[in-house]
Amino acid sequence: MRVGRFLSASASRDGGKTALITAERRLTYAEMDRMTDALAASLALSGVRRDDRVLVFMDNCWEAAVAIFAALKAGAVFSPINASTKAGKLAYIIDNCEPAAILTQARLMPVVRDALQGAGQGADARAIAVFSTAGRDGVPEGAQSFADALEGEAAAVAHKGIDSDLGMLIYTSGSTGQPKGVMMTHRNIDAASDSIITYLGGRSDDIILNVLPLAFDYGLYQLLMSVRLGATLVLEKSFAFPKAIFETMRREHVTGLPLVPTMAAMILRMNELEPGFLPEVRYLTNTAAALPAEHIARLRGLFPGAQLFSMYGLTECKRCTYLPPEELGRRPGSVGIAIPNTEAFVVDDEGRPVPPGETGELVIRGPHVMQGYWRNPAATEAMLKPGAVAWEKRLHTGDLFRTDAEGFLYFVGRKDDIIKTRGEKVAPKEVEAVLHALDGVAEAVVAGLPDPILGQAIAAMVVRSQPDLTERAVLAHCARHLEDFMVPKTIVFRDELPRTDTGKVSRRLAAGEMETIR
Figure 1 (tube, rainbow, N blue to C red):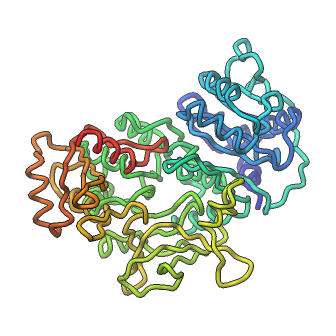
Figure 2: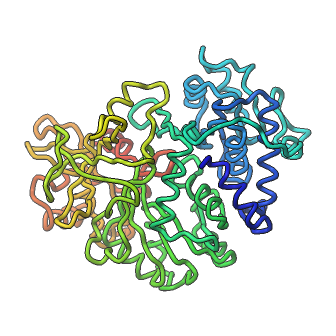
Figure 3: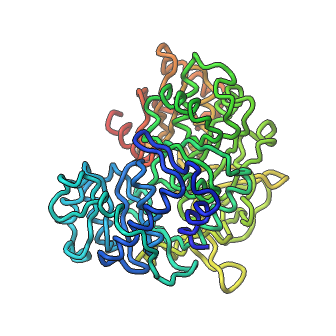
């Protein structure tokens, strides 16, 4: 199915139902369907054609949701860009994908203007249609009015697209270099969303709270899956003020709460919360990074009536595994089994399956695996390798895993994160798990720093929940629970951990900061 049909089908079933709630506006399915038809027609009039790229450079606002589905209905490939992206990086993306249009907010127009000026030979700024959400009297020179576009004729665009066309180009964070554009077809998105809805037991009466950026695939799929279900999405810009978010959740009767570990840590630091304080929540999900076992136990205590899904995924296939909630008690450190209609297995350096308990690289097969990286054949070849059948490519994730005797998967670490110290290999996650088990530690990240004697020295950055926690206490705890070579040599306390634009804790940034003060 083409993804634009998610919206039109739900509007046909129940057009009067609330589709989207933001602080500024509430939209029914009928309203959202009409708006996206009108904007799609405006994009077509501006020169957007089938398979053209359209950048959606916005924060979490109702306009972003409308822009995404309008681009799809126009037959284009939408590319969500984080609103915190700076002009230099945006210029690179413009050069890389050569968009036909950019849909943005008034406050971001200076960044767009600088990026267009800084773009190289790949971008002809005169050929890029820019739509801005500024009021009609304040639309910057060279831009069109988003509001006027929404009030145009709501005509369907005849583009004759099929589901094997590209639907989305989503750029990775670029933590190891320039961002790479992950190519996803409509069929890829359809398969991923269907699989996730299946194991979550998604329902049309769900009301989902999303504070994760729509430019982050975890946040984006909350929109895509909600619209596919005909459910309601409550879209917030951030989790900076949890108490206000909780009030919104109570008022809107939220049933689904997607989390990342940072959000979980913030919730668990709120000592005034009582078990069952959000009784209508029926499920929570977590991905981006594994939750420490201690955090899982405490979340289950605060949400006794909700199912907690611990999951693992990566942008190149959206989602790989999930742990059935009934297994949390027995395997709190596991990220579970392959999601429906997916195969996940662990291989050695030669591509051969490894036995239970042995560490190797996770490989994914399934209809949600990306088509490759946009205009980057070398990077594509490194990740997509020939499979057992001639017509498929398997995704080699670059992540190290092991399985237990029953086939449940456990994340060990990224290949390039492994610390080599004193001739031994250390997975940072193993040290982090011990740190999270210590009372007074809210969050922790571990990295290896260059050392002339050890090769790499283990260093930890810690956020305290108890201000009197000392470095000596942390090291003593580690010494009790870790082998000597795994005990950190350096402990650095911070009020918060460094993060990427998508909110993930950045091991690379933490390592750089710890190196400068060592």
